[in-house]
Length: 279
Image (cartoon, rainbow, N blue to C red):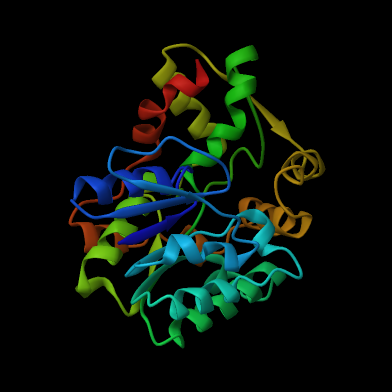
């Protein structure tokens, strides 16, 4: 039995589907009731209360751990989830971390995530850590304005990073959960090329078959919008990366191709598959 947390999100949903299609028994965990693929067990649990995971972990051999935004905030205790997994007899854990633990190790959220990585490594379980950079799916923040006004509003229009498709993160997670060769290491996950918000806007316009304008936000405007859905400190750290990426944050990682045997998907591929959200 494989337990997938965050099972209704951009990573958890395709991961759950891939594991089920591979013939695995899967328990999908989310905060609210949700529709899951046929044959998948669903459990409602809040990771902020790790003891609530016990019913979902009963009989589990592996756990994919994706933390929600509030579990990055001060006072959160995500390490307790690892303890619950150990006590429940889980044998393998795959943690979704962030590239920032390497590229910007001294931010508060990065320090906390690095400590969680260490907890995983010292747990006695088989383990793997996934460290993605920026997500292609962050473009969904623009969906409302594209639908209503055919405008993308974002900061740092001509500064890019190699954003990764969540479907590639899910595929990497599946490999780490299913294949022994993928355990015992940390993987840096990026897309195949550096792409700017202005270039992402052009890709969305091509997918839609109609023009989309680009409006550049100030950092303060972007921070105000982002702080509505994530801790302010995490918003600041994210904007630091988007506005002034380091050489390590601009590097295209070989890890996706090395593990999956194919190049990572470009942003244009993500845009074409998700164009309905922008219509």
